[in-house]
Each structure stands twice: as structure tokens, then as C-alpha cells.
Length: 274
Image (cartoon, rainbow, N blue to C red; front, side):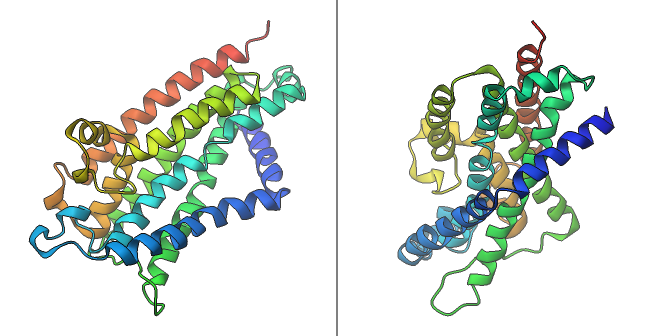
């Protein structure tokens, strides 16, 4: 199984490497969002009002710091949107049918794009964080201000949170790719889920400005759980959250186990030889 998985991972890498437009767009799109939207809203919203302390930005010292950390969840979501589209195209070209005919275990056909795309999402996610920190040292720009030392444990929690979030969304959209045969149907489902998942979270704006029922949804949104881990470790904002970072990380693992489990069932059924 490991040899077959390695071969399929190499195929995924070569397909990615030979499409420079894909590489460039996956890196530039989050950077453009960070600079255009982050700087625009960051300059306008600025600091929390003194009477609210840091509660309006959940412990972040300014809106740009709040926004730039939330962009990590945005990147993990958007990087996974097209993972299922490649499966649909491979099915249309007969590639999946030829792979199913090989001795390779069925699970490797699902695990190879899942692993590769989940790892690839780490690159633009941490590029966003690095650029946000760099902007703080450029005159005329608002940048990410880290007010707490995350330490080794915090760094591991941040890495795990981003990787698990990417893993679960890639599993979700890969399952759609295996279950659907029409690209139009796939992108219809993707567009239906993309914005609600993102905006029903605390990634881009504080949930304290939302109605109570939206705040309840945002609290259990997996994007929110991931971002809570990052903000707790980068800002030391324990006073603004109900639980420590490890609890939010545990909730994220639970979501991932559910999504990956469902996706494996869907993938195996779709790859079953008729």
C-alpha cells in the first residue's frame, strides 16, 4: 500500500508542479485579500474603543491582526474547493477507471489527493501569517501584532489546527468529486457551501456583532475552532474564550474524524467495480 500511495502522491505533485498558474494563483489570491481587504478594513476600523478593551476583536490588538489570523481559515477552505473538481475531470478522462483496474488498494486513490492537498494548503496559510507580520515593519501599512509567545506547544497546536482544518475540507470536497459526475453540479454545491461556512465563523469579523443564534452557529463552526486556537496562542487571549486551545483543537479533530469517515465511505462506494 505504501508504494502505491507514494506513486500516487508523486503523480499529484507532478500535476501541481507542471501547472505554474495554479501555483501562482494559490499563493497570490490570499496575499491580495490580505493586502486589499485587510489593509482597507484595518486602516478604517483600527483599534477597539477604550470602553470595550480588546473584547471587540477577541483579544487581538487591532482589526488587521484579527483579520490576518482569520485569513488562515479562509485559505484552508478556499484551497480545498477545487480538490473534487480534479476527481471529476479524471473520471471523465478515464484515469480513475484505469487506476481502479490496478492492484492498488482503493483507499490509496482517495488518500493520495487528500494528503497532498492538505499539505499544500499549509504553504499559502503560513505565507499569509508571515506577510502579515512583515507588513507591521513597513511604513504606511498595518501589520499583525503578536502579543504572546506561543512557544513550542503553541506552534504545534497552530500547525495541527491548520492541517486538520485543511484535511477535513479536502475530504468533504473530494467526496463530492467522487459522488458527482457533472462539473456544473460540483461547482453548484461548492458555491452553495463556501460563503456560508466562511461567514458563519469568526474568521473575518467578530461574532459579538452578530445576533445570538448566529453566534451559536459560529461557536461550533470548524473554521472558528481553528481560528480560536491560533488567536489564543498568538495573542494569549484566554480571557475572551470559554475554553483553552486544546479543547478547540479537540473539537476540530472530532469534525475532521466525521468528515473523513463520511468521505471514505463515499469514496469506496464510488470506486467499487460494477
